Image (cartoon, rainbow, N blue to C red):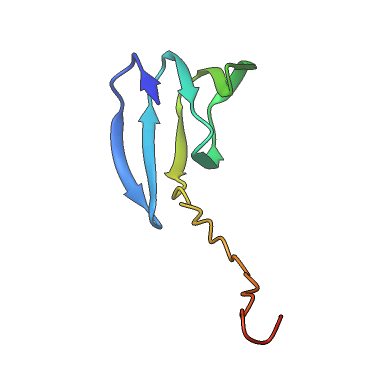
Length: 89
C-alpha cells in the first residue's frame, strides 16, 4: 500500500486505521488488504494492475487489515505396482 499523505495512524478493534483531516488523499490498496470501514468522501475508485485506487476527501477515517497469505502445499501420491519375478505378477 502506498500513501503520499502522512496520516494519524491508530488501531481500533484489531484493525489499522488512519485519520484524514481536511485533505484529499489517494490510497493504493493491494489485493491482500481488506477494507473494514471508510468514512471519507469518495471522489473516484478504479482498479489498476490488481490494486484498488481510491481518491477521497476528509475529514474521515479508513480502517483496514492485511490478509494473511496462504501457502499451498502440493502433495503427490504415487502408486506403483511391483512385478514379482517368481509369481508373474
